[in-house]
Length: 200
Image 1 (cartoon, one colour):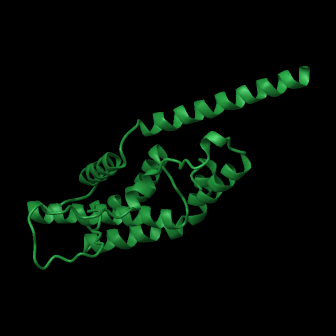
Image 2 (tube, one colour; image 1 turned 120 degrees about the vertical axis):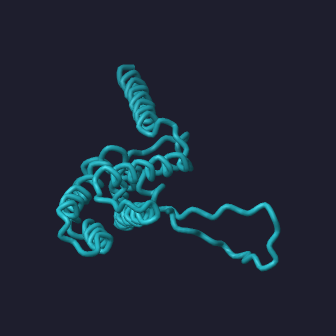
Image 3 (cartoon, helix red, strand yellow; image 1 turned 90 degrees about the horizontal axis):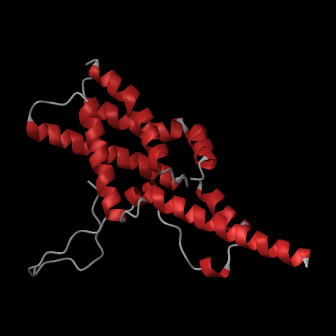
């Protein structure tokens, strides 16, 4: 009888742990739609760039530079996604800031002839240069895709969870191309193929 009771208690404890993990997951994501998260991420990145980059006074050049630099941050997120590192929330924010801080500090000194070329090359080198640290961080924070897949296999998920997908991380949301909006009117020469546009 004690064996049966202990198994029953272990099963109840496991169900409670899974429910708490699910609540933490939803709390971290705050139930936000991926489109809203993508928009919030873009807004955050642009705000960070406005605070830290030396921007031109001309409005058109300023907006163009902001858009280009924000697109390079998205490229960095795609590089992380390509390696299977699904950083999210404050961990991703910390890494983006760690990437941008030395770059923007050097740009503020004014020693660079073409600020965007320097920014682009520096941001694109960041993931490759810091690959070991980023991988260790992803494994430590549960953001490594291989570790997540193996954990799902090893945990012996219950029948109620089979077929359910885990919510997407911020890196996955940002790295996914967005389909263009359809125009209301008809166009005779419209291409009927599947089209995607860059995020910014």
